[in-house]
Length: 175
Image (spheres, rainbow, N blue to C red):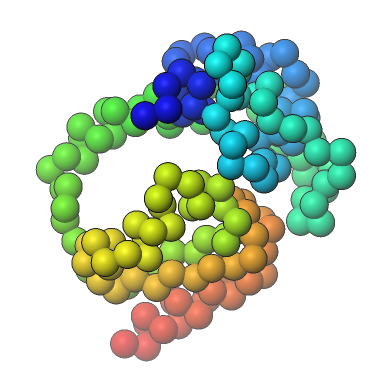
């Protein structure tokens, strides 16, 4: 759909993202990946790697500290990025394996909590799909909750997300 400059396509090529990430220290990679706020950042100009297109914020948001980012950086320094990147590399296989369930309904109570500024939710028609009729038909017991925040809403709004989960559990265990 977007070609070689789209982040998913770059991440799917074994070794490519790892080589690009290696040009930066682990803390900088964490800042670039976890603190993205611009949708167009996930589509690099032709000939550029996604990581090079992402800004490194000079000021951290209130929801994360330098120490937390450093802890993530330290863990990735131990293990590398290949494991998480394999998620993108297995997308085609996942589609194949899940094909027998295409169109199946999810009938259990379901709560979807999302940041209203989440780049993935705001891009590619995702918001329209999740709030539209087709998705409601596939997931009839869906409750969508929008919180003020971005992609890592569970960190950004930890208390609110925890409360939403607890309310959901209480609600479904009453029935």
